[in-house]
Image 1 (cartoon, rainbow, N blue to C red):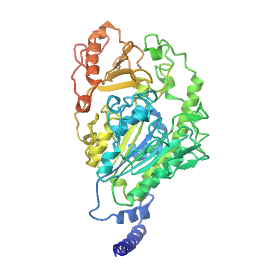
Image 2 (tube, rainbow, N blue to C red):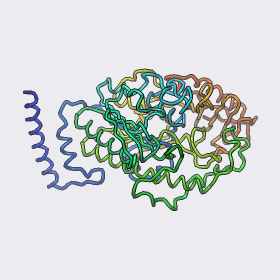
Image 3 (cartoon, helix red, strand yellow):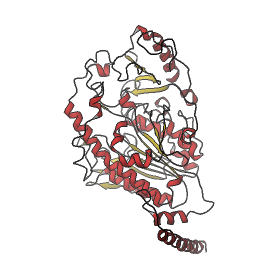
Length: 508
């Protein structure tokens, strides 16, 4: 009887939908790539039952090792997310390496609290994640549908247990870095691909998950974590990230912006921390080749964002969905002679962060010093869900909704190690300074006088008081948890160097 009643109701709704669609289309509809789904949108919208759960959906799209300036070459993502939402112009990954960064997003906590300090070693990889610490459980227990597609934490493989918080689980299981030969969990029915492009497959699976979730009428959280533009690992060898079919000829003449950075192939690195001090000069042509290959690999992600937005629009749920785009960490392309991540420099720390969604003003920008650790707290606030444990980030909901938001003035930044206690350099970042130590080695940069971070002021007597104050903040944050990670410490002393601006005043 209930099934028959549902069938009759569905038939009435479909008939009403067709009539509405016909009337709308005959009257003329103004659609773009984002609107090009008029009949499908009406159908999905008409099927939304009054009184249904109206909490917002949350979708997180993430790339792997993407620089903030790579976004210049993703026009679809900029148009559909940045122009339609908010750009955070000072976003960072405070632990700029794949697994620790992903663990922060999985838990809403820094590494000292979630257990993951590196990709490998006793404090590295998926196995180091604190048991049960998966923020998706907050949403699932609150009645949300939860789905994951793509690259999860490093070290996760088919033999590991499925994280409990995900009602739909479609993580890469084998060939994680291969791009062309890989398998996904398939929500319990493993799917293997040996002649497909991983970004396109993740995009299709993401779209299908969004479609299926939307049609239930219940809210959902969906993570779509791409591999690009991470380098390829195939048959044990590191290679350039391959392009999707049709993209191989792109960007043949593009010049890497790092070549014009004052820190590129830094001439004198003798004062830099040890991990930069002994590097050889940069192979300029290799940097050019890698940059172009990375951009080519990102074009499929750009199209995936467009496809996802189109799917959400077609299902009638775009207007109640927050879509967030970021990267797990940044990437250095020859600055300070370094190529890669896992260092505390601007190039490795900085990531793109775009958000569109309900009540987010289109084309807006924010200069708050936000981090990936803030995202789980933000998602919980937007969904009205209580975190299941103490989180170390701050919700960005007020800023997203156009409100003025008090914010921390000092952020913990750190890198890990695969040996000993799992730590390497740990430090702090303010709007002026970047400071860190590893016990024997340290650095201090002043962005007001040295934006390219060419001069290490760690041993400069003129900055002794600044260094001491930053060390006190670092000490206070090393074991922070919850609100103690988000303190406002107040002004810092000015350096004694007469070349420093605004002498006699305090700085942050």
